[in-house]
Amino acid sequence: MSKKDREGMSKRQEFREKRRRAEQRNRLIWIGLIVVGAVLVAFFLIYPQIKPVAAIQPAATETRLNVNRNSAGDPNAPVKLVEFSDYQCPYCKQYWQNTEPQIIETYVNTGKVYYTDRSAGNFISDNANKANGGNDTESQDSAMAALCAADQNKYWQMHDALFTNVLGEVDGISFTPRRLQAIAQSIGLDMNAYNSCFDSHKYLSQVNQDLKDADAAGMQGTPFFVISYIPKGQTQPVTTTLDGAQPFSVFQQTLDQALKAAGAQ
Image 1 (cartoon, one colour):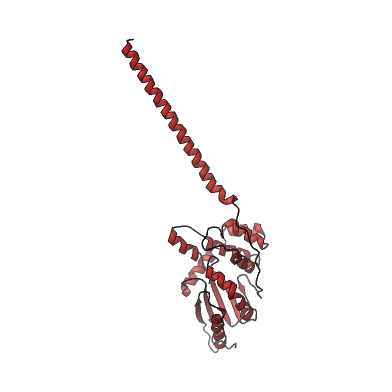
Image 2: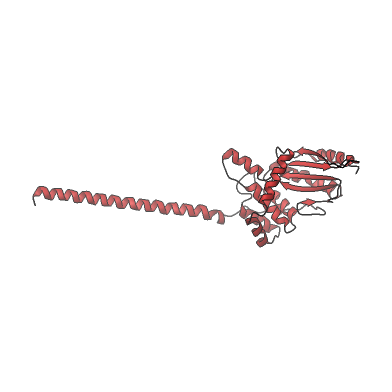
């Protein structure tokens, strides 16, 4: 073999060796990328299940008489008041803090008004989703949690606990499934029954229907109220609506007018 042939063979061997090393290096890089990707996927799947939830504050529950799931008061009361609300809505919390207790004390516990609390579906979350392209379901999830609590005759305790523990509007941490569990546990629910109810989406269709009914009644925002009564001497009910976290005086005027028209005042 000539010197030229030996030099050519040496160069080919050197080239093959460089290519082998490059291929090995690329394989190691790809393996590293796959491992890192797998770790990241595992982290994003597992971390939401293990990260600590925000502390749960104990809730004081307003005394409501003649409770039946998400309703309170005398079902034969001359005036019916239906609230469409969202636990993520700051104005709903404002109403719950400042006005609802006075309505309960003055009208519901005295047998004048039958009060029903309904959700507004995924209203607040959907509005945020449209703005930021997200997929938040905290509004409907908290509403379903309250209805699951109603199965254990603790709707209103959950209602009060949810408003007590909301941290912000569509914040991604107030009403995650795990934090809803913690809130449910704080009011003494049977957690096996609660988890079965919530995980099965038992009340999702009811929550969706709440939103449809609220829209049909003319809701533009939450909280939204529908007041109905049958005027004295008539047979067909009359309805009126109120929007927003109005002060008690506004509700008082509207409810007193309804009671007077129904012949109950």
